[in-house]
Length: 217
Image (cartoon, rainbow, N blue to C red; front, side, top):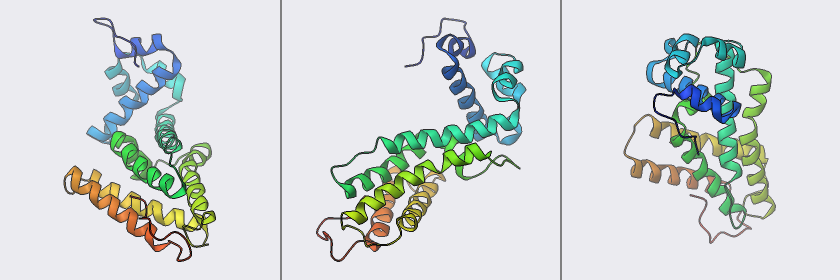
């Protein structure tokens, strides 16, 4: 729960009282909001510090420069996605795979500005650092583990789990991207997302495995 802000206190001062992690999250949330609302031109140290009520020195100390903020935004986006997927559970491998798909969509809808930074590259010239790039591989690793569990359980055919995971991710990403772009209402978009993920998963279902259960949706 975020700390209560006394009347007249800036968001920066409130987050500062709560600790460094709260302050870092506040700065990144404001940076991502500016990027989504006004584009990359608004993503400046001066603009961020002005909106939060702090000095630019604070930003330079924590992130080094604008490139450091961009790198931190990328890392934070994938950290949130990873945490969401890690909490997606299920009674069996197929249920867990379905839970991961739903968690992926929920995270994208809850973190739209971060999702754009992660996958749409709105900052011209930005390239994630090697460390940041490694952090981006963790969600795919979790999906691959879930696919591997489905293969071991006989639900999916014995194919390369990395390939299946990549195809499933592409399907989920395509559905989410259309929804974020405003195509159709939420209910229609959810139904389309579920059908897309189910149809993609069905392609890999094993004829020797349990075929009476529907694929994940």
